[in-house]
Length: 244
Image (cartoon, rainbow, N blue to C red; front, side, top):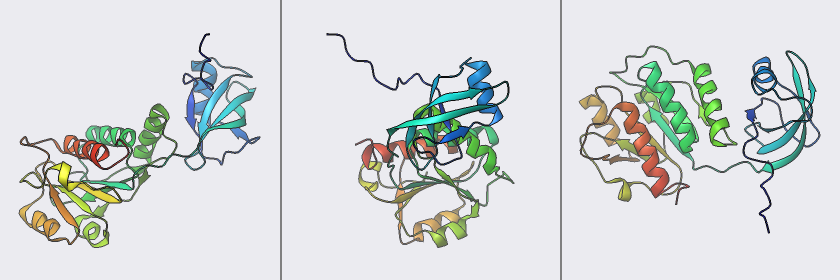
C-alpha cells in the first residue's frame, strides 16, 4: 500500500508575516512577498503557502486574491504549534558586517532565543543595524522552519551586560576553561564570545569575577570570533539544549 504523502507538503513556500494568525483570517502580503509568490514562483489563486507570525505557530493558507502587486491569503488551519527553544542568549562582540550577518543567520538556525551585541574595548564596529539583522533572522527562520524568531536586543557595553545578567554565563575564553561537556548545563543561560583580537586582560578578569561566569574552552585552536560563537552554541545545543 503506497504511503500517504505528508500534508501540507514541505515544499510549500514559507513566509513570516507581521499580523496575528488564526483560522479564517485574511492576510495581505507586503509587496516583496507578493512579488515572490506571484512573479517568482508564479503562484495564483488557490495555491497554498505556510505562514508564521512568531507567536502562534505555523499555518496553512491559500491565495484568495492575486494581483500584479498585491496578494491576499486566507488562513485555513494550524500545521504546527509554536516551538519551544532553549532559553539561550548569544552575547557576541560585533565584528565586520559580513561575519555578523553570517553569525545571526546561523545562530537563528541553531535555535538561540536571544541575540545580544556586546561592545568591548576592541570592538571596531561603530554601529549595529538591528533592522537588517532582523531581516536576516527572518529569512533564516523561513528556511529552517522555525516558528519563533530570536529576540534581537540593542547593543550594550560589556560592563552593562555583566551588570544585568544573573543566569549562568558561559564565557568562551581562549586562554582556557572547562570542557563544554562539564560546563554546559540544561536551563537558561548566556554564551559570551569576544571580538577580533579577543578580550583585554582587564575585561577577562571582570568576566571571570562575575558570580555566574563559567569559563569554557572551545579546543586547542584559536577560532575566529564568529566561529567561536557558533561552535559554542552548537556544543550547548548538543549537550544541554534541544539536540539531546
